[in-house]
Length: 63
Image (cartoon, rainbow, N blue to C red; front, side, top):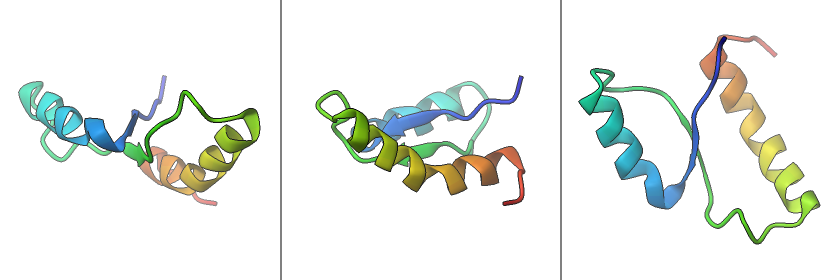
């Protein structure tokens, strides 16, 4: 099943390190601003809308 990893900015170094460790240097993932937990439903919706083009690009889906 196709999937895209999403992490917040403070975890980008960890995400890149894990990708290298597992043999996937240059692994593509979507980075979003931190924090997430304090967002309202509308705030989450806005973040998703902002990230969607990148998610689709990683999946190879043309808009």
